[in-house]
Image (cartoon, rainbow, N blue to C red; front, top):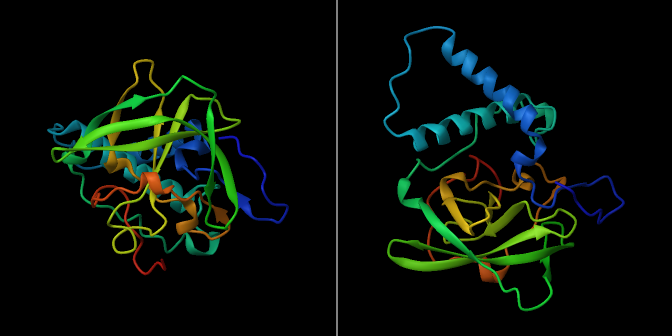
Length: 229
């Protein structure tokens, strides 16, 4: 997605550093390679009993291939051969919930400055507040969009009580396609680490205080083994 240049040094800057933004066609090729490899030998796979979980596992396999072999992989080139795959919590349907976006249209768009991993700031528009329920309690997360990116997608950076233990201390991200209804499929199993976890040359926004959840979200990507917080 489009980014504002914040520095003149060789630092590679990604506002969200979301892997899906690297190009659907590139990832589609990797997905086809994974599928071809799976179908090249052996008995056919069993009929899917949990299609959402199986899709999540397939997406994770595709992402592993991309991280290992993709030209735009955040893994440094000299470490890709040893890359064993990303670390995840098991897929848990309890963290796949509906959400609703609430927008305040009474005034002009609200633009805030998000701190980043390089101590710079990134200006982003606060689109609205996503409300959802987990374990019977209601929570909300602010959803953002880059100033120059339009509103076709929502960026949801968040922190939770797993940060600095199981997950990255700077929080994790969700990306959502905009809907006309304001209703969203909020799947924390798809929560992912910013690229600066794997390569410090990337600049990554840090979730604001309003997006720090007072619960543990044990879903999505975890910290890689041996990685420094």
